Image (cartoon, rainbow, N blue to C red; front, side, top):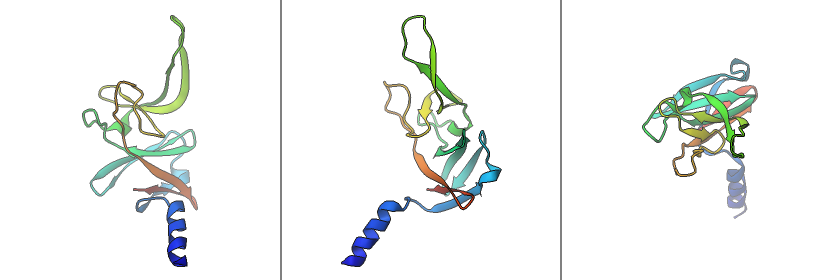
Length: 133
């Protein structure tokens, strides 16, 4: 009974998915990205301002290579004729049709859409960029 409890406690603290070393951290400075193939999945790993993000490299709208898109912020809600840029580098833009997806959650910026792209855990461990997928 104790061993089962210990195993359950460990599983809560262990990232899900298989561990894949993508690169050395020094080989992925801010502004770089890598597209990796894990089985039948294409996954983009991006270093944005020193933060690593990993997401499925397929836009749910029409299948575009999402991770080839631009990383940017967006315009904030504001009064008429006022333009406020915000959330710098928190979104990736589909290169085909311009859908914007939040890097952390995979949710689309358009509130009328329920489209979402899968995100994956990525971390730096002992100098390696590691993807859990």
